[in-house]
Image (cartoon, rainbow, N blue to C red; front, side, top):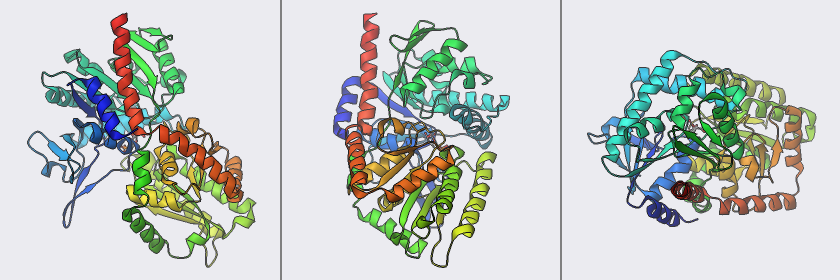
Length: 495
Ligand code: F6P
């Protein structure tokens, strides 16, 4: 779908109402550096997906201003027009104190809800003061939404698990505002969710939405089961909606995607070529004469980076013909380093990479190259293009957009995707080599199968996956969500 077609759909459905997007992470961060201020795009699947949509549709994006120079570039209401070189929308920054950030973001969002929803055997920790901070910050964002809406009709599109209480807060003040929320991470089964101490309050918050979206049907089912068990409501399985206090929330799957055509264009840009040259210089040695197994992730325990390294190690030991013929290139973006579990993971990864290299390396060959840095969009594309095999081995992932970026980037029709069966993307990308990342033996064998896979098979699989993504790009995702708002409003009119 073209971005202009999405803009038309949204403009027709919103019929003059203001469109306001809310997320925690902002699409552009202003940072202070020696030479002045630079603008950075954060490593975030949510931003990758939403930014082209908001650019196409216009409107206001409300997000937390966390950059060191964020306050310096905005007006007195915290607003700035973006993107910097060709403004298409307004970013309104909301300020959160250090203490609030600790409770709301590091605590409730990333030490409680993140592990609770992913179920990767990392125990969530709950704290009442974190919950209080979470409520206070949701309230602050609600005020920002109401200020932006003024007295006009509005459609608010909330992103993610940082704002479970926001839709209810908005509806309490302005029941006429249409509210949609997309939950970018998995929703666990009801047995897993029931340990959450403020379960009823959180679910009541989410049921303020008119539409609540998840990536896949399985997460929608889990959500309805959780609600049915935990809170007074009427669950209507026929229409997949929940009534709470007479208000319906429609629960729907919308598999998120990427800007397929833009990636197809950008892959042959000079920016991508520059990043490729930079990689080759930085890595030295002749890595291109080996098969490249590439990973590109935030350093997060849900991404299965440790498991991926262990399986790669196992492949080298079990299939000695791969030695000196393969290299694993891991782009690893530091993430949430204020949270203890993430700091521990960084240490574990350093040790593991050292061990594997010590075990297998020769004078001319280093098996694992681990580049810990924030790699921008073009660098990730360059790595996708260089890859013989892209490794996505998440232990659990709502969707995983790197997998989709890789497929979109392969205009040459070659390349293999090795994909965890526990990603949302595995539903659409059935032609990937699918693995269970907990089963290291199976993963090592799949890596070896990729090593041996003939070109014809690689191309057939790639072509089928490219056809799927060409039709289901991020504009289609956005259009589906807004069209669902139209459809459900119609249903409500009928009942
Ligand atoms: O994948 C879930 C998610 O919250 C995305 O929405 C977000 O882009 C990503 O994780 C990064 O997280 P953070 O914003 O905490 O760096």
